[in-house]
Image 1 (tube, rainbow, N blue to C red):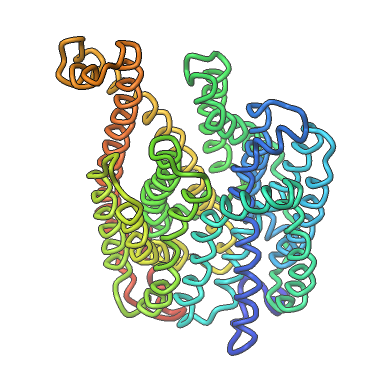
Image 2 (image 1 turned 45 degrees about the vertical axis):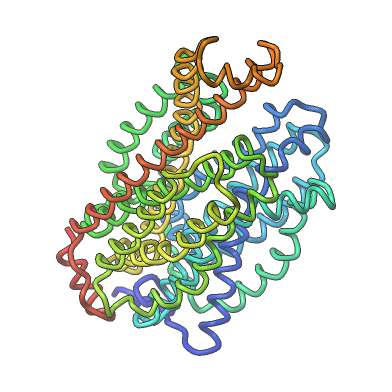
Length: 521
């Protein structure tokens, strides 16, 4: 005789209401914020870490790469971990271990030791994002999932923006170890509170065999891909045999992983959730739109610091401005979920962000602070309109026992797409600037009007050449930047159209979710 589902099992989620729901949402959002913060908080501190550990800045970047690789490996494993050990138990364990390894990172006496602890920190932080999203779906009543997802989305977007600001401030005033130590009190608070407050949401444990082959292939191709993306620009991409080898391993490994996981009886990653059309379309749209958003978010501070004379702190202030509008708009969008077709909301949001990107195509080297700040502020209005409904479209039709697998794959695809976009954007930016500079230099000679104007005050030809070199470099970078924003605008408009491949999500509640699931494949 079959046992009835255990209380709080995957088949029988227990929604919370009132203060209990608010408290649980706070815990989940804080954990998600902490994990995402560590993806960017180290970026501006690499020179300080390298100096403190007596290594080169290039070697210091392994502090970033090691975390990214480890996290990328564990995120897609979320579904299997949840089934094997229980969702709440994995979530609480991840928080506790994240705090422990953060402490050890701050105490690391050498780069090698720090990289090892960063790997362990990444392995711990990886499950926290999808697990927090999975538990959010379980604890929220169907009619409140839009609002709950809005809160989660705010932490997902704001944490990477806050990372460089906090990292620079903490490193300058207290030293680089404190960018890790700040996680300790948060983890000490979160772990017991989450274990106690979410205990009733624990899922049933299924003693399934471990897919060692699938796990090995996953580690191999994801690790190769992440190292390739992180080190490609530094090593001249496919001009380096090392990068070519990593690319070959990543491609072959990915294909082998697909074949194995789709034919394995107990796969380590449940790729079968892609049978839902709305999940597949939601993931695809998320990858393209978020990649555009994230690459622009990386490009703007780089441009401001290298071309416009901004300090890292002021560039961070500009980047963070989009969060001001987002905080106010996200609750409004959350209330529209279930009342307005989510595809309409996504289209409005992506089109709005595309319009903001187009505004940036008219930037020039004379742009003042407010001219640069305005698009950042306006962009925050559009972000919730596509980010919240996309999560709802992708995950809304999954069965409760598929939340963890779906959330893990969604987060993995989003972060991988953004890593690809950043690598492509920064490489193209440098190459385009170099090409534009060469074209402008070739068009100038000693009889050019600008040369004559500069030599009038009595400047030597050497001084004239130096001034022109700086001017040409600045204009070349500006042209390359504008062109990238043109490409991003077009890509965003494409993603706004792709979402309409998804089936309409017009029904509310659990019955509606089942009906959407029925037509979603």
